[in-house]
Amino acid sequence: MIKTITVLGAGTMGYGIALNFALAGYEINLFDVLPQALDNALVNARKALRVMVEEDLHTEEEGEKALAGIRLFTDKTAACAEADLLMEAMPEKLQLKQNTFVELDAVCKPECIFASNTSSLKLTDICAPLPQSRKSRSVVTHYFNPAHLIPLVELLPHPDAPVSVLEEVEAVYRRSGKITIRVLKDINGMIGNRIQAAISREALWLLENGYCSEKDLGRAMAFGPCFRYATTDYLEILDMGGLDVWNAVLNLLYKDINNSTDVSALLKSKAAAGEHGWKTGRGFYSYDEQTKAQVMERFLLNLTRQLKASEDYAF
Image 1 (cartoon, rainbow, N blue to C red):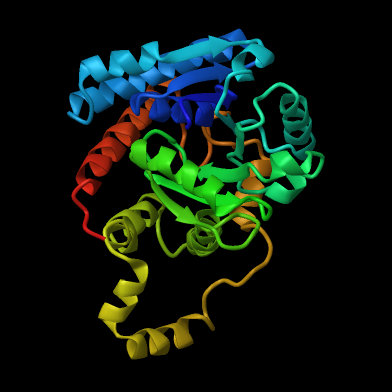
Image 2: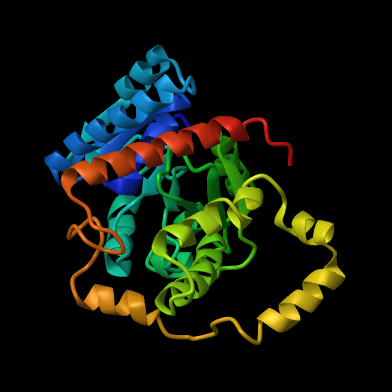
């Protein structure tokens, strides 16, 4: 039975994963090599909880109890020795993940399940150096940022993992309030990110060719297709519209929409010019510290309200 969960990496994804599990009542060990990263993780968790409490998603007591259940570690062995579930949320570097899992295979209990938050690396590659006994207890559990608010977690078991391991992990996520999907074949990008990539190809093409403004692009998505996609089964939407109609429309559009296999020229030029978004203060929009704080506050508030509303969705 999973009681203690260790999260490796206290960055953007790690703190949200730890907070989500802590709110569900699990004992959390949060590890990072940088003490400052651990301090920042608690600061970010408190900010996230403030919004969730204000929006009545959790009580203040629940928030304080969750924070008290997150223990901070810079000692990897100490953080992992008693873990029932080991969740890595480290940078997407194959060698780093492989070395970490090999190191911790000797530290963790035999029954501990190894989980990776990767979506761009294959689980079979990450687990390649591990013994068979550990491969059979390994899974991908891919979150979307921010991990404590986005309901979806994509699950992909190692080919050698029995169904019972996947079911054990699914039970943890049900208790944590997550919606899980099973990825049936090992594929680069999983499901959600591949769909995002397809959307971004056309969206950026429309923008760089002057068909809409930056702001209207965002509104077209948020208040158009994404508005109904958030509430309804996608294939039901196709059925409602009529498959004959969709067939006719897509038969026309597929000939016209962007099918480039290269990255958007606009995105490529901005990356080359050092316009990296929040990191540099300029991307598609300009950001000073005050603007970033305002955008993040709006982002978390809207997502919290959406998460609260989604509890009543019926599908």
